[in-house]
Amino acid sequence: MENEMQEPQRGRSRKKAEAAVAEKTPKSAKAIKRRRFIIMAVLEVFVLLAIFAYAYLLKQYSKIQRPVFEVKNVENTELTTDDIAKMKGYWNIAAFGVDSRDSSVGRGNNADVIMIVSINRENGEIRIASVFRDSYLSLANGNYNKINQAYAVGGPELAVKALNQNLDLNITDYVTFNWKAVATGINILGGVDIDLTQPEFKYINSYITETVKGTKIGSVQLTHAGMNHLDGIQAVAYARLRYMDNDYTRTERQRRVLELCVQKAKQADPATLSNLAGNLLSMVATSLTWDDGMSLATNVKKYSIVETIGFPMDRREINMGFKGACVIPNTLEKNVKDLHTFLFGGEEYTVSNQVQEIDNHIASDIARYRGRSEERKYKAKMREYNEGEETSAARKRNSNTEEETTRRSRSETEGGSSASSKSTREESESGSTRETSAEATDSRGNVITGPGAKNSSAARESSSAAESGAVRESSRAAGESSAARETTTVAETGAQVTTREATAAAAPSETNGPAVNEE
Image (cartoon, rainbow, N blue to C red; front, side, top):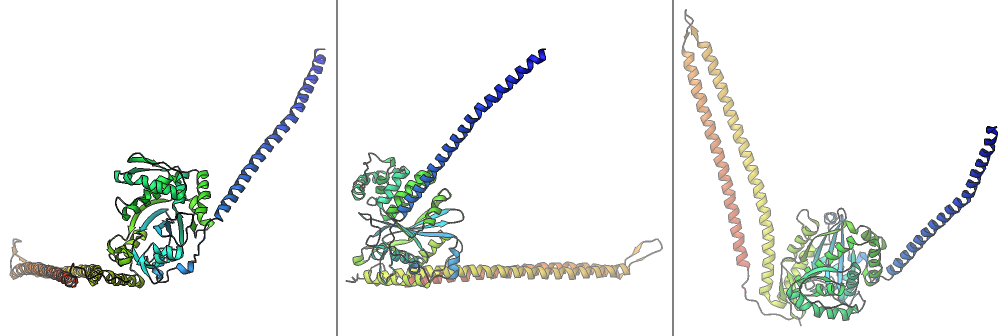
């Protein structure tokens, strides 16, 4: 009876459970559909944002100024296959900063900033060489003047061509910016921290005022020396300072600002980098492609500036008539060799005939503006450097010859000693044999010493004499080797003295000749 009563109850419980499941199933399906809808909506938003961002960057990319720049017109045809091979694996870019009051970045503007940025593609190391704007070099159009005029005369194409010809490089990419672009970029990155000296603080506020007027970007003046957090305008003003020292130190400040910007970019998030690219693309002129820009952006964390210098490293200043005070390399050949060692390392570089011709032309121009005395000084520097290179090579050859002579002498000495020792041992063994054969015994078994014993003693004496002779022969050979080395050293010293005397005889007096003005 109880079983019959429990059976209907179980049926009712099962029906209630099934009804509950039936009620929950539609709600669960609705929730799933709702979640799917939300996910799809979010994905569509992200896709649309990506499309809009890409379209925005593409629009900005189309705004990049593209002055005339044909790679075939700037390539350096004077370089050998080996020269090109030494630069393989490095991405060399010429960076120009023009002092334009508007947004122009093409010809007609002097390049106040000239940098060679060399990127090691394998490890991301960057080396930067600032070429001093007043360096007296070939403009690659038949004229010689301050190198910053190459950009004003022929834009980036002539400027890159001039760098390649003067420095034995093969740069085919460039970026040109003005101060407004630099200030904007630094503001987007959040500014930079720089420790100002008292002389720098004395002049920086006047530069801030001038930069605000030129770029139409707001800023404020600084109140103290020491550590300051600089915005874009203030950082540009810092990079333009030169009245308290010179242009050489100014390029150091420029490279310092660039290093800080690279560090900031490495720490920036993707949104900041996208904002940076979007705003700067329309403010620069460059030969870089979209792929080049994406490569730089995606690998920014890999890059690091490891070393910077100013070019020419060995220099002096000469007033070149109406061309003004110019920076003269001492000499171009020497500085180009040092530059290649700095950028690419490896073995010592041999400059092209083109660089040697430019070097000779600089010497002739010095004579036109400063007189023959200055020309003789410059050519004496060239001779001194070349003779120094030849002396160094000769010293290396003499050292190799000396080592070879010593090695051969030692080998011969050891060979002679070995032969003498061998002969001595053979004689000794022969004597010993004769002694043994001459020995006899009496009835008691005692050894009777006969003529063989005397022969053995004589053999021992002969052996001792032979060994002494071998030692004397070895000492004599070593003495001859030492004398040979002394003779080589004396000859080398004599050659150096002769070189110094010849240089002193060729050096001109310190009195400059009359200045000859081309006009």
